[in-house]
Amino acid sequence: MINLGFIFEKENKFAEARSLFERAGEIGHFEGYRTIGTNYLNGTGVKQNFSKAKEYYKKASQIGCYECTYFINNWDEVVKLKKSEK
Image (cartoon, rainbow, N blue to C red; front, side, top):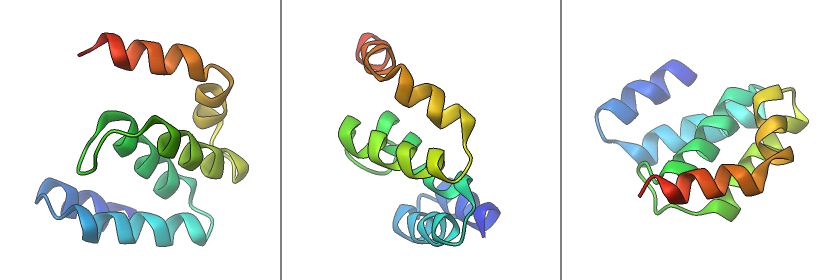
């Protein structure tokens, strides 16, 4: 499911990809939620939205994503870094 989502992303089929990532997260695969969070953080296929990114990172963290836990615990720095990349 996750891999198919990445294939859809490469084909710029972001709605289809997001649907698969969302379903993956719902059944316990944190990579689905993490990917949606990263898409919001970077503005990939969606408008950049830091609050939605954090929301999805929290969901991923709750089901075992340690990287997402790190991002949440250092959120101000993550946002500052992303803003400085522009």
